[in-house]
Image (cartoon, rainbow, N blue to C red; front, side, top):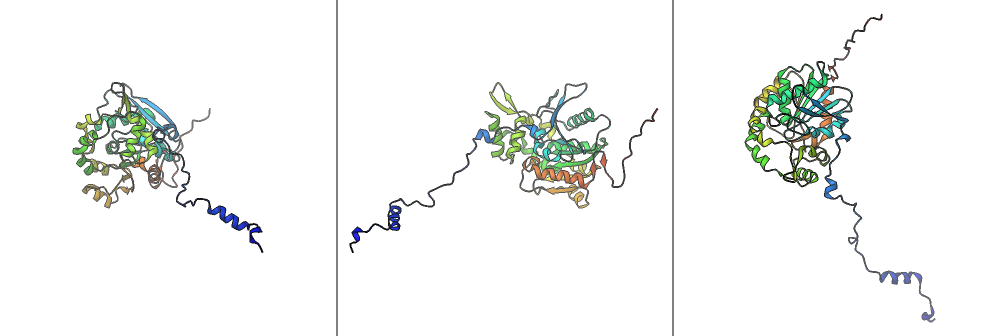
Length: 350
C-alpha cells in the first residue's frame, strides 16, 4: 500500500501546527493591573461634610475672637473634642462619623489653629485656651449644658485635664486623654524646636502637604490626612506656597505650663477617666499608683502613631463609645438604672 496516497491524520496535522507555534512561558504573561491613581488624585483633599453634619462659627461676646466648630449627631451626651498643637478640629473627622451614631460630637479649632480667629493667635497659655473652651460652651449651651465628655489629644489633652481639674464645669461627665503623659511630654520639650524646624516648611500644593504627612509618618491614615491636613495650612502670597497655619515655634514660653503637674490634675478630676496611649508609654509614679488603685482606665492602642484618632478612627470611636456605655453617660449625665429623671412641671390649665 502506497502511504503517499494516504491523507494525513487530523491529530498529526494539529500536532505539526502546534509545534510551529512559539513556546510561551507561564511567567511571560502578567495579569492586567488596575489603573493606579496619580499622586495628585491619591492625596487630593476630602470634604469634611462627609463626616460631620455641619460647621459653625461661635463669636465670643466683648472680643474679636471667633471659634470654628464642626458638629455631628443629634442625641446622647456631647463628645467635645480638643485637638493637639498644629492639628485642627478635623483631626477627629473620621472618628466623628462613627461616634455620631450614638452621641453628639463637637470638634473645636483651638486658638491659632484651623479656621478660628482671635485677637492674639500666639497666646496659647493654658489659662487662655481653657477660657476659650468655657466661652464656647457658654455660647452653645448657656447655663444648662448637656452632659459633656471632654476628649483631648496631646496639647488638647492638657487643656481638657485643666478644665476638668477646675471642677467648675458641672455637666462634665467624662474625661478622655489621648497620648499625652506628663513625664514623657516634659522630657520631649527640649527637642520640640528641633522637631518643628525639621519639618517640611513649604508646600507647592495641598496635595504635596498631604503626601508629606503620610510618607513622613506623622499620619498613617491617608483618608484622615486628606480631610485634616488642608485646614492646618494657609497660602502665603509672598512665598507663593502653602505654609503651616499655626506658629507653634513662637509659643515656646507656654509649653511647660501645658504639662507641669498634669498627672496630679488628671487624677484629681472627679469624673470617669480614660487614658489612651499609642505605645507602652512610661507612667510616672502618680499615674502608676493611680492605675493600680483603679482611678482611671488605660488602653494601649497598638499599630498607631501619635494621632490615634486619625490613624485608627474606627477603633478610637469604639473606645469612646464603650467608655460612654461603661460609665452609663446619657445626655443629662450618669444614668442610674431604675431611676427615672423627673419631668418638668407642667403649667396648670386655665
